[in-house]
Amino acid sequence: MKRNSGKETFTHLFALALIAIMAIGTISCGQSKEEKMREQAQQDSLMRARQDSIKQAQEDSIALKVRNDSIMKAKEDSTKKAVFTAGMVDAYKNKLTQLSASYQSSWTGYFLFDITGDGQPELWTKSGSSMADLMLHVYTYKDSGMKEIYEEEAGHTSYSRGSNYVLAISAWPGDEEYRVEKIRNHNGRLSSTLMDPLPMSPDGWPQTKEPVIKFHSVSDLGPVNQLLK
Image (cartoon, rainbow, N blue to C red; front, side):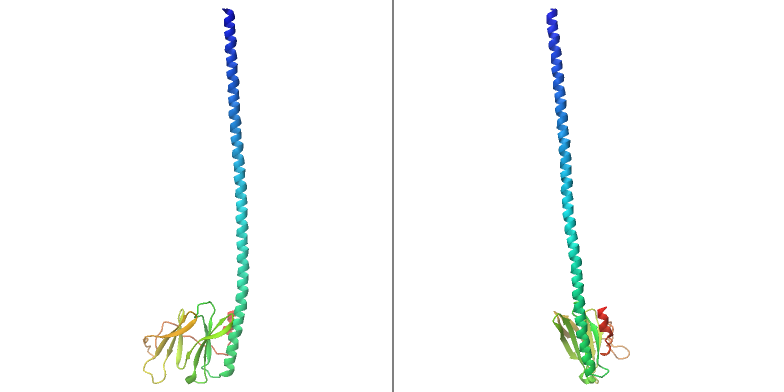
């Protein structure tokens, strides 16, 4: 009986030792799996950070290129505009110099007004040797040079400036009514439309909300030179 008891005790101890070894192995395996998961998580995090860094560098490079291209284009546009404006000013001054040499009457003059809406003013001239033969000419300037885009009789006529149009108010001696025309731009071409009669002021001249245009002397090139500033 004692011998069997010793054998059972040994078997029991051996079983306990085996269970302990298995438990330790299980814990060890669990710890190894957790460590692998942590290492994988760290690698994934580093990979995402690297990818984000590369993506950000690419975006910064693209943004820098866009900015540099924008700056370069702005400089080119500014240079082109300066060259264009200088050509326009020379062309307008040449026309005014010709008018100054050809007409000495006080009725001859000019003003600047952008009626085509391209950001560059047109040259409006009124010239003639007397009130009877006064003519209004409108010139615009393109890359190819200056060209005339409108003309009409200008005797006994005043002009008022609208936002994108010009009113021509005229009356010859003996006329019972004034003639009011609106000059507007249509695809680069100017045309005039007859308007209804305007209310009269106490001094007998049509009342308009648009300011009357003042003509400069053709010998005064100051307003044209101001276009360069």
